[in-house]
Length: 296
Image (cartoon, rainbow, N blue to C red; front, side, top):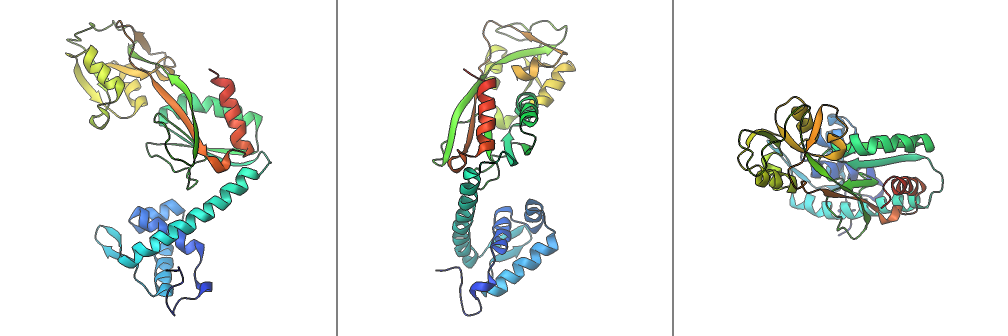
């Protein structure tokens, strides 16, 4: 099958921008979410989709109460559109990777707390050295795609296994048990009478959450949150003890670290970028700064 299907479709009728809209709707499932993703209005998205369907002579989506569901024809177009997208993105990555000017956009992704306490000071220094580079820092739980250029550089606690990603371990983050300033250490090996702030149930098997249950088995869980900064602020307010990354806990004057005979397990942080960008000057410049700051 070729993308130009049927007599009603001419090669001059299909534009890459229409395929981008089709892909966004297929991935988001609704016009509203796809429109926000592409920075367009919902009526424009709907109009462009209808025009694409007329040009192809095919219905690409079933319109349901729950959103847009691909038809069989839509699934067929999706496979081809994704290959076209990959070629277009690869072309852009190659150009970016060969560019020698130290300017342009550098999109970085990390967890929220890592962005605030580790990356923000470093990126401020990067901005002073390279004022023509615009850095966009994305901090949320979603794993951004390096292949789709959703991010140029990604920091995360899980190693990268994608074959097209160049990655390395950046640093090891130590953790500690914290209480509000003036608090006494909880009773090690028991924790009876203590209240703790820990990860929500979706992340209950993270190493620090398991350590907290093992070291303070009788402690009462007072609060759960998947947000480390929320945990830290609850701890500052005396809501309970919390295991936190040391870059957060040591930065807050309202917290004190407690020793219980063994420290909580720390976590490694990895940095990755697409192999096509390995020669991009702005990528190399930020990696060099990371090397200066976190040299082993």
